[in-house]
Amino acid sequence: MSHAQTAKLSLSGLGKSFGPVPAVVDVDLALRPGEFVSLLGPSGCGKTTTLRMIAGFMKPTAGSISVNGVTVSSTTQVVPPEKRGMSMIFQSYAIWPNMTVGENVAFGLKLRKLGSAEVVQRVDRILDTVQLRHLKDRYPAELSGGQQQRVALARAIVIEPEVLLLDEPLSNLDANLREEMRSEIRRLHDAFRITTVYVTHDQSEAMVTSDRIVVMNHGRIDQVDDPVALYNRPKTRFVAGFIGRTNFLDGRVDGGQIVFPGFTVPLGSVPDSRGLTGPISFSVRPQTIEIATGRGASTDAGWWVRGTVTERSYLGEYWEYVVRPDGGDLRLRVTTPPMTVYDAGQAVWVRIDPDRAAPVPSPANGGAQ
Image (tube, rainbow, N blue to C red):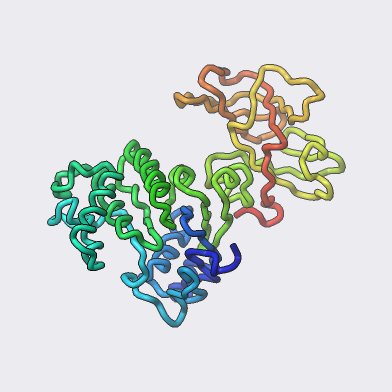
């Protein structure tokens, strides 16, 4: 994938500064034809600026963007948005209130001078796909937010763009509708296989829709991976903390042991432990930790830690506990199924599976980002 010619969309050394302030720094990314990639990160991480450069609304101050191997943006020239063969969907949908659903969807096809019979055929096909054919003659004011969003999707997809760009398209919808629409977006992607770049700050949205997720932080890419790898094997503390919830275990290698606050474990229990020295850190997901009233067999390779339940919260689908290991001030978040109940103040053992503890940079080594 390093060869730009095999990529549908390629960003090379892409950068954008506003005066002295860098918004995007040295972004390299290549999308395969038909791939769905999300740019994920908090506000101000550079994801929307990157999308606007891909769309042609902004000129990069470094690097270039190419589509099918042809440069569309560089520091010297930018192909205008309407000549890129791209469709973009904004938070506000931007569908025309004075046009019916059918007219809205047909608009881009008519601009392309398609024959009227083909326009009708393609509009009806896409409206069938988004389940809005029965509303073809309605006006946007008569539609719900979710239906308006479907019209925006249909209008963007019907022209079969080279690249589909989505900028936080679900942020104006309520939670239930957001959940439904993210599945809808993935379903439409599977039906049309249009290369897609999706900007969001919502990690569950990115996890459901994407083939790969690009996690951005302070204008740079922290990690690019598929959702499973990103969740289970984060490469930085920022990624580990941003994708889902996690516990950070910060310890130090001391001879044949790792010393954590309140407990020690054998160094040999860690996969790939050869040559590890000094400060060491792991990301451990709450649902990978087991909780029990007694300690397991000493032959068990897990890290058994004795502690006390200090807090508990019932969240319907699971319990969340905070367990403080004896002799330390560490707070371990642990989740259990709804039927597994412990009391605040109860003495317990927790078991951490070292195979599911992902190594991340230690703050003692400057890895606090």
